[in-house]
Image 1: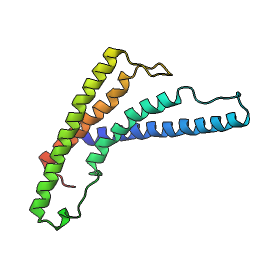
Image 2: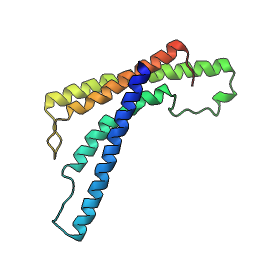
Image 3: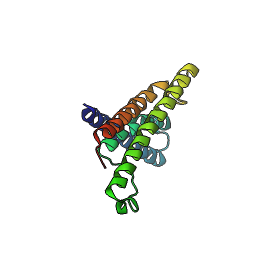
Image 4: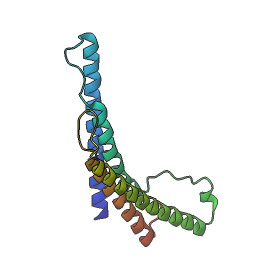
Length: 158
């Protein structure tokens, strides 16, 4: 089940990032057209708000898949020369720290979500409430931690 969720989250994150790229392309074309014929088309209203909020929702959705595939950055220059037992220990410590980090970030994301919601914070141009954009990241962090904990329990190595 964790694999399916991680894949679904990654597909959702990738789809959002593709949408951001499409809106960015459209915005560039509209800007170029505005340089040629000023005042005719303009640019995408609230582009900065849209990109900031969508990126904040999309990027964390990729973390669980990356953990599942052990795709995070690792420095093996020294570790590969260590005995296998030491390598396994380092891997377990790193995976445990990753799970702890994901849970730590999730805790603070909840705090940010609650504060943003209580403040009634809205995006400056579009006027969208900002707190719902925390939800995908929070879910992704919890899934990321769950995958790392499962990897610890099953002994899955990088």
